[in-house]
Image 1: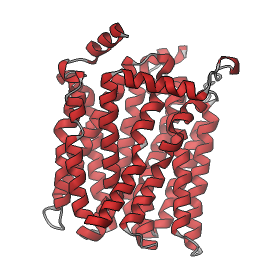
Image 2: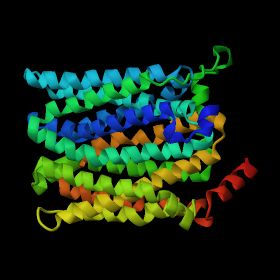
Image 3: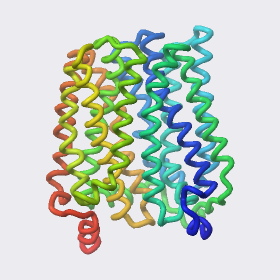
Image 4: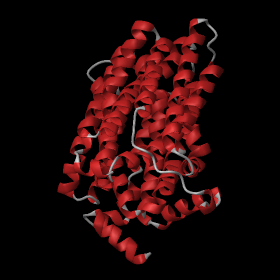
Length: 421
């Protein structure tokens, strides 16, 4: 890493390859985010409840393997695993396209594909967070992580719009091929990285998987701010996922816009997220790195209440406003709360703490999918989105009543926590 300490991060070859691969695959993933549910709606005529089940399966692996995956990855080299997950995901998506072409596609096959994608996603997302320090010097990790969030937001700008138009041009199932190609591109970029990854922990020094996982959970529970962040993030993610199960159906069938317009609307929200990622550091410097965590969530979440009042006229702007300000605030919150977690957690257990937080937060996603689909079937899509909006407005109260509100900077909290531990 000596060379990368002297050369700007953006000029290091391995980092460029990593970022290139993630940029391409993020766009492809966002194409699938709109093409996958549209495959269910347009080809299989899925009901709101079936869409909820689909979203639950797409996110169920976080609940099933979120904790053990972190410990398992700590015991192996990550790059070959990351490459393998990309290849498996590409093959899974091709299966859906081929099945649709020969008219063998069923909702069961779509669920099975969603399960495979979900398992591979969990392994990849935890794995890349652990692998990144192998190619990025410690002094550049914040920049590297911020770049990943910017890429995510950038993919969300191009992906939904591209996905919507691809669905119109070639059909929903065929549009999934774009994501399959993006996963293969990511695998090729990872294959080209030359930096040698440090070996895993010697087997003689390992403890039981349960004991390692428990240590991460104990640290999160023992920190009042991390507890508040976990509660807010879990509830918000649950409700956002409940909304995700219904938003495509809401726009296309309830409001009555085309798939292309729906994709464009989601891209506008993603453009706002890109702006939010760009100004997060500036806002943190102006307001304080602790204040920005609770303020970004509390002040923007109520805007989600506008979404259920959307109609196919000037009120389409209400949906746009909801995803622009609600989504932008959520991204600023995500970036700043991760920075707090990195600052307060000892490096030796950071991987386990990351896995614990992802388990607690992302484990809520399958429940959210079922909640959205179930409520949508019982009380209607529009009424369900109103209930979700109320919940999103209330979730940040955990942050408001935490120690975050009493300080300006994260450093004040880390000092207090280390003195008390």
